[in-house]
Length: 257
Ligand code: SF4
Image 1 (spheres, rainbow, N blue to C red):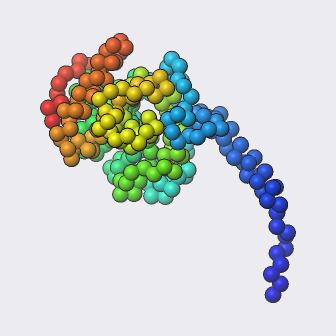
Image 2: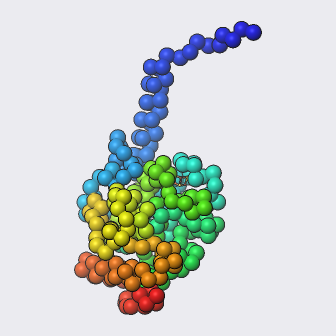
Image 3: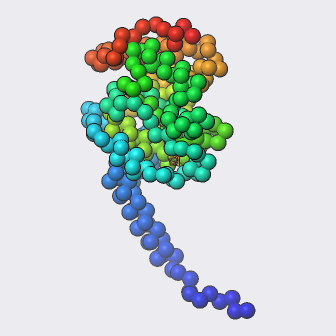
């Protein structure tokens, strides 16, 4: 049998030029929709986001971003998820909570923080004088990693541009990073949460307070006191900024355990 192919092999330079053109077109689409904060640069680290000036809100952009995300297949998690868990709350919220990724119940219901850890987060938020509807709650990843394993770098790289775009749209004054994966991703560090929590970190003009994840608090209730102290710093800073919660805050079940 004659094994000679019908068409001659392509010139590798032609193939490279074609791939480059496709990549440029894709980047241009991301930039146009705001989902790519730093064209031409890395997108997997906090440093990739351009420095923020005074918060500028872009009304109705979240729905537009969700449409742009579509039935996302940008990373391998699409093959095991039940639902894309986008985020909930007020798109003009001054306070945003960012977890790591959806769990089993979140994946089932399509909403972040709805299981036992979510119930604890709700109590923490209410103890601060806020509500689930008056803050914004989301995750680094929008699809559940199998067996709730930690997010992997390639997944974060694909999903982070959308989180960055969400945060640009919401323009919060303070972000509470729940757990180490969230804090590490937002701040571009590998430091443990125990060394990051308890103080604000600047993320291009937005203050980030890392603290323990509610799921960790369910396993280690002794850490609730530290978490509450972190949240009290958040409350004090919001007050200093002249941002009042919908209802008066006070020590509550979240602080007492
Ligand atoms: S985790 Fe993010 S990037 Fe990956 S499939 Fe889900 S939405 Fe897309």
